[in-house]
Image (cartoon, rainbow, N blue to C red; front, side, top):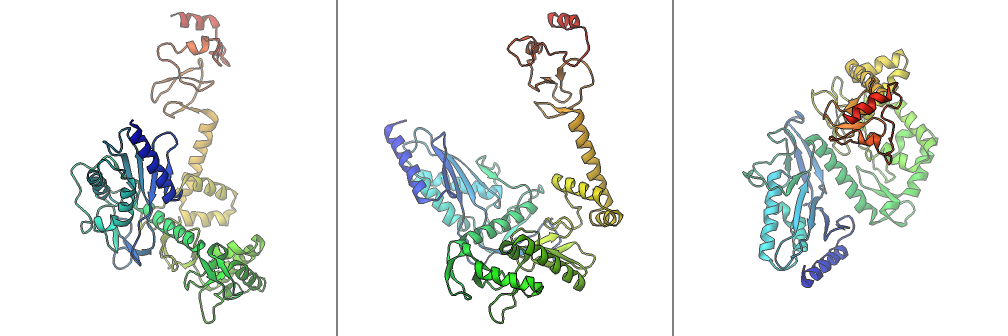
Length: 460
């Protein structure tokens, strides 16, 4: 590496660190490079439209959400020794909401920018292009449609937006998404988190105490966007809850009918007072309505009315469409997906329930799901008690008899049953015959065998 290249690289990394905050740029510890997380500047009232095989959707076959932020594009880069004099930075570009073809098109344009600026540092130009020009370059406009690709996973490329799928996608383009269902929730949660971050950094006038306070010391009502300081709202909520007026937690603005969400109430009042609020609200809601559920998104939790015979709920506050049974993104007639953690909770809740609650759980989740939870937990407990996992492939192995040199039935590797370390294929018994080994002379530990047989086997 020439001194000029090294100096240019150091100066560029220092410049990036001074221009961008830690959320946008992090310098690599062991190499000349780093990671940038680039949030695009979206037009006002930018919408995403969800269609495809996720759900039949109401009327027009999908759901539309208005957002202010999309999850960032992640650009990982490393400087070769002869950058910027000769070679460009090595990089990968990953994103959750762009197709592989769109990411490939962006990678190719970054190559073109390097060719135009060959011999000069280029990272700032790359980042500014991705931040300010990605939407225009890919011809993305509102509403931006997300749908399943032909392979059934990940968002596909809308033919009306972007370019056609290339014959050989760029290996530097990484589509970081598990499924369209997960992507929708990640987009909505990221948008909400970013909006909260922006709100926290601004100053607002509370119309109760008439003091200006930062957003992080304030709270707004989602429907009307009226802002009040937390201290004033806390006193207001506590008085109403103590009086049993849980349905009167309205926005203090005159003639405004916006209502505080349970999540907002929980943030402000003490745990004991919130328990009283939650109990009274639930009881009064059940008296008035047969089916009431809360929006499952942690920062929302708006009460949602469930239509009779329908498992789809649509939050009136954040427009999130969810299954009222499993609380995940609405999946139509497909069965609910229950996580391993939920199976554990479900199994424990079912075993501790009386007959009436057991029938309720069976109606809510289905007897097959309950039975699966019981069987899987019994199987897991048996495996944990009676087997160990192969250190190479993770296959569960049960030891019935014989010496402590084990052979995995899955990958056929040798390993030690005592310390679970891998053994040499050429001489697996050296592990038990080496005085420096933690398992020295322990080949037949806990096994009643003739030691002479072991010695004969090793000599053979």
